[in-house]
Image 1 (cartoon, rainbow, N blue to C red):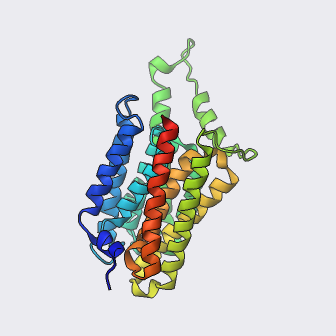
Image 2: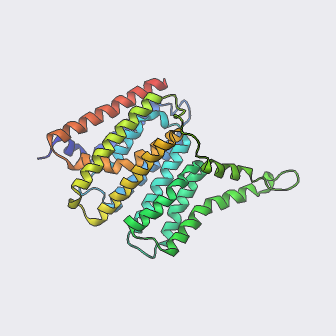
Image 3: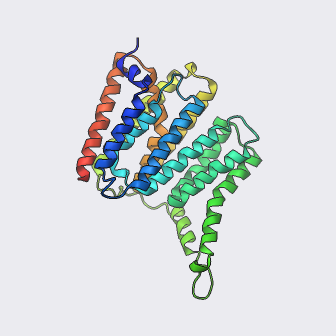
Length: 317
């Protein structure tokens, strides 16, 4: 029997309503006053790529926009993160890499797509160098979940990661960036990589929205844990390829949670990456459960997300 949550999950109006909700949130978060147009462009592009990712890989067995809608709602719940450009760039580059990597499933001749996938990761690391922490995890997942790694694709991934830094190096070597004695100052690049090696003593996030941060993280973790548990309990209903892709999302979610716990000073960006990785798992449980309890969970989660959105927006006033 279809319950209200299933009707909403399969409705064609779900994504437009979520998009309208996000427009209101962006306006209240200072879109016009603070000229957040580049940040909004990154957000819209991320949602678009997420829709393509869902469609191309049939992440949900029914026609549904719940993955992108869940992403929008959870992103709006942490509205204090929306004005930050670094998180937007990292999020967009990560989802683009997912889109490209998923096309390489069980494909040994996919060096080109893997090059571009890791070039996206490298580009994101120019804004948030800690994205490079994900590279070994992606290699492992290419071997275990996507089954697309060999010496050619591994080499392509290394070249892809290096490409954005080649362009950065060329920029530093341009005449107007040279010092008075016509030598290049490469210290910005060295300082950039030094941040990657600086695994300092964990500290609380610098955001003034500490309570809002904790509440959004708690909501995402609870829904993500429910989603992971449900999917693997009923994974036999999905094709093997879908199971492997959700295994990919599960591993990425777990690793991002680990990073948040050990390096919470990077919470602002890592929380946005966690939202991206967890939203397919959350969308799956919200779409394919139809019990009375799951119906209650759906509306309680929605109410909490809206309440957190209002709470964090009020704190931004």
